[in-house]
Length: 164
Image 1 (spheres, rainbow, N blue to C red):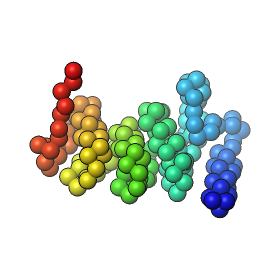
Image 2 (image 1 turned 45 degrees about the vertical axis):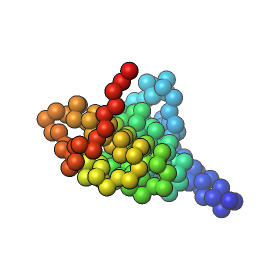
Image 3 (image 1 turned 180 degrees about the vertical axis):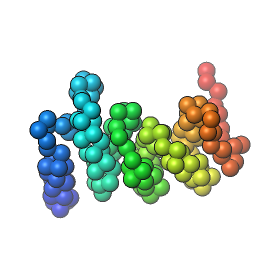
C-alpha cells in the first residue's frame, strides 16, 4: 500500500516537472472554463500530458486521461501511440467499465485504425456491455464517416432496443 503511494507521488511529480513551462500549462484534469482559455501551445503541452498518462501503469491516471480524451478530443493532438494505449486498455484491462471508457475514447479520438480494431474485436468480445458499447461506437463512427463504413463480421449479432 505504501509502495503504491510512493509510486503515485513519484509519477505525479514527474508529470508536473515534465510539463512545467513559462506559461504554466494546466494539470491533467481541466475544467470547462480553463479549456476555453487555452492557447494552441498550451493544448500541445496538455496533449503531451494526456499521452504520458495514457501510457502510465497507474489506473487512476489512465482513467483521467481517457475521460479528458472523451471531453476534449477535438482539441487534443493524439498520435498512433495514444491509440495503441487506448486499445491496450480496451483489450487487457480487467475492469469492464475502464474497457467501455476506452472504447468511447477511441471513438472520440476518431482514429480509423482504432475503429477497425474495435470491429475486428467485436466478434470475440465476451462481455455484453462492452459488446453493445462497441456496436454503438461503430454505428456513431459510420454516421459521422459514411464514406468509410466499417462492416462487422456478424451484423445480426447487434441488438437494437426500441426507444419508448
